[in-house]
Image 1 (spheres, rainbow, N blue to C red):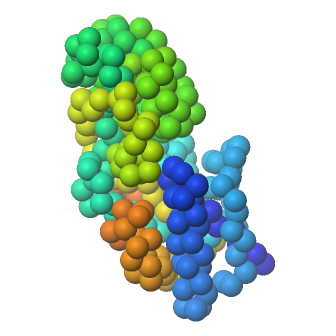
Image 2: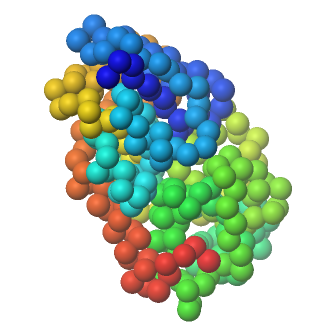
Length: 274
């Protein structure tokens, strides 16, 4: 490959988080080059548009995806699993994470203090291909659904931040937020949570995997994993700000749990968040 590309698009909650992740990526690539990896790597700005196409590129040296497209949309067959971050956030356990079930303060005051009590409210989610915002949420709701429905409405908002804004503004009532994202919001944007209340958590699943093109090869993939840890330990304050404890090596089969969430919801006659 004459030139590779790299980008980390998933946890850029604020411009500061984006800068920290980009610096971590840059330090990773420098450590990787010193260890014999390719030196000609273009760092992309935060990508927009078709992320699935980006993740499938033959020249992808490093990026991060969600477990749902990795396991459910065929991505696993086209990429190499490099690492899964380990975060210091409520809801994380090693390389596993949960979604935090939240409601608007108004809904909470009106009795929506448990997920079961949210029947008939308005659901919000970030995207259809999100495990944290849709798949885990759907699985949590499924036992309470009747005839395939639980909410009065369900609306896509495009990001977890937009979902939190909708809860705060009163245009939505209930949602599930990635626990790492929520921790970042608590750290940097606490005003978004003033009108939001936590009512529980979903079951845990493997965290968002770091991936590369299969053309990288297994030996270089192992070296890239080591370079991630070199970069993390190179700046302790940055790692603390990112709540990044380290990295784990999970396998493809570990992400089967995300597919199981979907099958469970379908088995309970709740295939769509509704």
